[in-house]
Image (cartoon, rainbow over all chains, first blue to last red; front, side):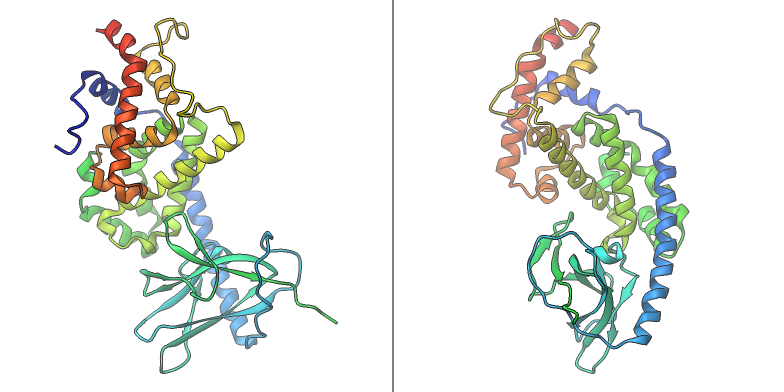
Length: 169
Length: 189
């Protein structure tokens, strides 16, 4: 028996039976969740449109210096176009998910830019600290090995990128 | 919803997940209806605060929607979402513990609950008070084992703790609860 070290106990059984009874919860939770979901759909739609429009305008202006510092994101400052790239020769579809796009797996797709499986995208980010990861074919999470790691609520590894303000003369 | 409904493959859930991913938000409402009572019960017993439990439950469902594409086995949507819930409950518990520092820790040890407790308290209320005396890890392990009816393997996957540690937590939780509730239980019989 798996829990043989715990003797059968009527008190514990009675306690567990009591705790299995239904509890009363605010019935408006469902409505609030559905409202949030619909809002997420709208935001995603808008964001996708904006990002694809932006990609047509600019080739990456380069990544600002990366460093580790404690800061909230985003911080005040001009948005820089930050390039994200991944080598994934066998992937059919790669997207970028992070706190800058609400972890929306549809918001920021990468495009294959070479026959050897290099995928790229560019995202405008203001100075700050961000967590992100790549998602391959809608299922695999791949963190950037060159960047510091963090772990999300699911125990999945994510990368941390810090964008410092660019010095402007 | 019984244990099998949560941890066995559920084709109905898989279909609903596919519909949500295809843009059908109402399908997510059906999934929520399937799990809200069970998940809410767990959150309420762990956090012992109605508002906190409802906040965590709402946040869990929203996150579940946003991360739905990461659900590798849609037939086990319930188990996948339960993992999110357990993690959110842990986070909420720790945040509250840090902010209030009023929760009893293992070092303090529980004091026996007697029938001289709060006026009018019944068996259900005494149970709630007893749970409140358990350290968070013991409370979590007890609820997962005895209320959610998970196996130790499932608990290990869910919590990241080793099976030996989990058995120890459950064992200690049971002992504390017996010590705390024996007098009330005997009087109830």
